[in-house]
Image (cartoon, rainbow, N blue to C red):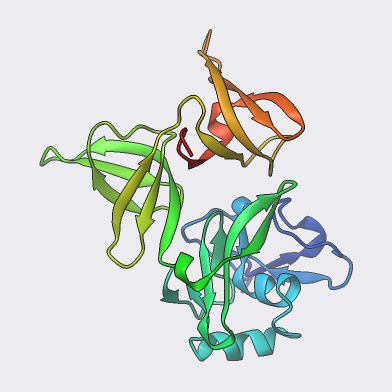
Length: 233
């Protein structure tokens, strides 16, 4: 009988652009991310992150051994699935080795960035949706699939500083003029910027924004901006 269902691996040459594999010809195959908080196109399989990016293991067998020992935490939770999808702003903790990272964007690729242990208890989340529950409460949907209740003044495109321990919003970061942001998609992906102004959408086109980067001003889609800091910071 023919095998049915989703393949758990893929050719490295066909890896999503966001996966930071610099030598795709070193091996023929790589793990495919399982369904989770991030889609395949915007995630690094945990085994690929550990073996090919962080160089914490030489083989998949070694990766599985480390994961099965519950030594790797994603957003404070031990993950044992080698194909678990790790995505933007996720917090990776390996306490035994005193290694801590967050996932950011560098030149269009998802890359781990070292952080201090004290910074692992909070996570930046982008608001991608909101709805009113039958009970009248406002439910906010974040970019990693997480949900939380919030006030009605929280808007799509804003970011929040979220406590992973208490599982609650600690601070709202509005998408407004002078706010700090990271461009996470498009040809300017990976650049840190400050919002200068917005251009209202016309004829059904998405809203655009003018942002200031180290290289100068660029115009990009507002949906490509991930707010990382307040305007007065």
